Amino acid sequence: MKLPPELVLNVLDNWCICHFKDEKHAPDAPHHFYIVIPLQGSNLVISIITSQVEKKKSYYTKVNIKALNGLVFLNRGEFSFLTRDVSVIDCNQAELLSKAELADRVNSELKIIESQIPARLKEKIQKAILESPLVRPHIKRALNSLISNLNS
Image 1 (cartoon, one colour):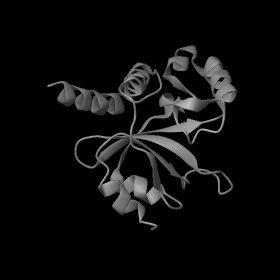
Image 2 (cartoon, one colour):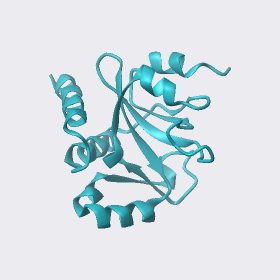
Image 3 (cartoon, one colour):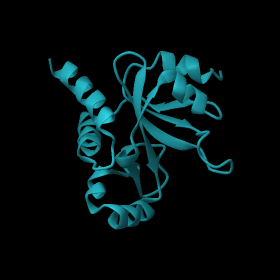
Image 4 (cartoon, one colour):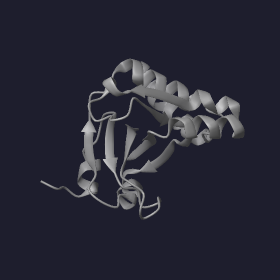
């Protein structure tokens, strides 16, 4: 059954990987996978997963070499939906959105592809976002708040 994005996002309360076409991408751009991190209230942090590994590495080498630490690499065997040998989570492009804002950006059905994110991967993603020189401070504060609440 195809559910509206708002409904899917409203029940989201744990880390997951979602698949959807983003309105802010070109009309001919494909659907992408995203890491979705629910925060307190109705906010989320999202980061895109891409197979354009060499392109991302080359770009960040030119723009800001420290941003290479904002890339989290995934091998094909880590998740069954990955079709390339290596993919990358671009944590440098982490965005803080409300659930409503994300629902407005979904150009098609939003599917939760994976809801079991290993703890070691969560830690890598958190570290990559927090150490990225390109992620805005308010996103880092929001993520730190989540981490603090989990540890208390």
